[in-house]
Length: 152
Ligand SMILES: [Zn+2]
Ligand SMILES: [Zn+2]
Image 1 (cartoon, rainbow, N blue to C red):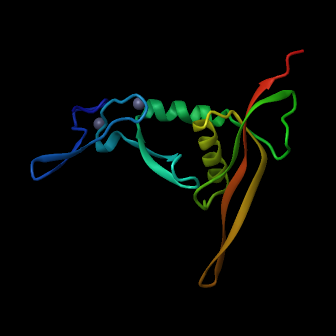
Image 2: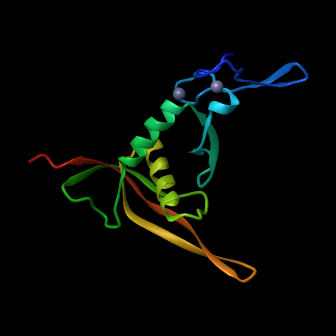
Image 3: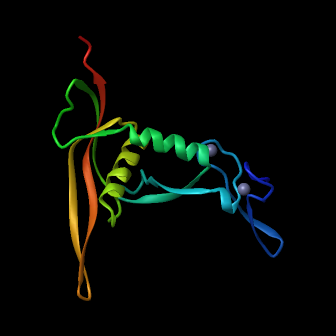
């Protein structure tokens, strides 16, 4: 199949035989090696783990914008909003070098589970020691909720 963006093939070949075909996990369009955006999806069958997925640039950006709109707070409520559904507690599956990436991943998984907010946001720092150098890694956790603005 021809890539959504260029003339390259979306299939992987070995000895003239195609063995894998790559499509965007959201819109289903074929993607070549150069035009796949790699990301991770929370693995519903294995809580605490994520699995890799390919997305095209449009679907990736759309998801990125949605992720950015997820609100995360340390308290158990969000001012001006009612909690209308609870989707349970979740923690990021990886240890991230960067604090912001741990939060992004938590929001990403909240979005996949249909939540638009996270309450009781916790960030957990892990100390790693490598010869003489001590560095921090991060995971983030919180309660996934669906919120709606108070109607006055
Ligand atoms: Zn391409
Ligand atoms: Zn797509």
